[in-house]
Image (cartoon, rainbow, N blue to C red):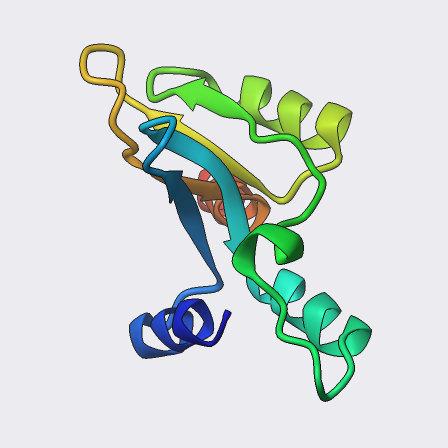
Length: 111
């Protein structure tokens, strides 16, 4: 957990994707909120692993060509804060879409 937290702080990001080498795929998103929950739930003698800290929310993926309205529907129906966006052809991750980014895009359209 300490290594993962250090990476978040060094890169100045609020979340990272978690890669499972056994499955050879992304399995979750680890957020600063997960770290806070981990800190609150552990005693001084316990050491929490990344797997234990990952939030229970399901991982939602959308194609890079999807409409913002579709993304908004996914945010609401799944009660999540981040969606993994990937391109059609490769399946690699383009970025994590956040509610904040959607609101910024809407604000830009209105003004």
